[in-house]
Image (cartoon, helix red, strand yellow):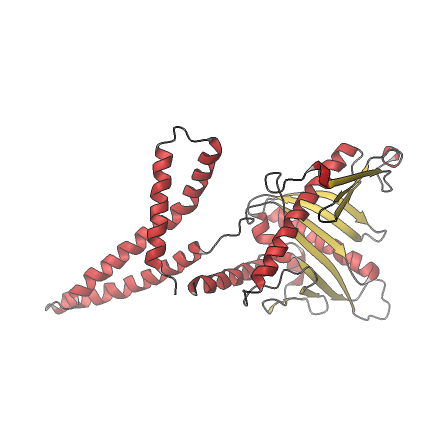
Length: 358
């Protein structure tokens, strides 16, 4: 079990040190000041809950003494209040456990969303377009900014590949569980016999990396420019505006040609490249951690089949937590909270179990 008292002592000591530094800011560099303010904001709710917990524990100690009182009415009153305080302590312990869960440092970051049609031909491209619309609507519902960085469409209103930048409050914390293979079962519009087909699309959600997260040196890049072959007018097709950047240490390649300007294409490509490099580092860490973690939400492997959308039954099944919902149309309209919240809760439970075994 977690040693609450030791945790409290360490947290309160650290909090006092931060308060002291913030009260005497002279000589502190801006970067150090920003870090202290951030730590102060993160620790404040924990310290406040610790105070409530300690107060209730003290109340319980005092009420326990009254159980030996000779006056029956005082004894009854003490028993009643002890029951209430017991419930309060349990709630505060649960809240403290939740607050003490190690935070994912990337949860507050914006995200790069990548969707690619998989097996299934034209039907897979149409399904990729459905997923693209679903995440766009989900972003709208959360008041997030949704920007298309690059898109490759088919003639049937399908999408072969699309890369988007989603920015707003806690984007990655909500979208990070969407990475993996999404499978669809439905009768394609081109199918005359009414036979159900199975197709798939892959989704990758990467935390958007800032320059401070990933330092890319010019010597590690090979940048090629070429003539765009996509839509956009004559100026796009007759100038070397498209950009392909290869990160030599990792072999990661990013191409960008949606903009008419080579400079804009390079900036977008570098943004995607930084996020893919950061994601690459995270995946390596997760592989190491997954050897130790037995109870987690999937492996995070891009090839893992995570979800099935069954149109004939109006069903969506998440295979990682054995969750099945029969509101397919609502989910495709962007109402993803019923899927995402249980995944977040499952992850928190796993981390709580780890914390409790420390």
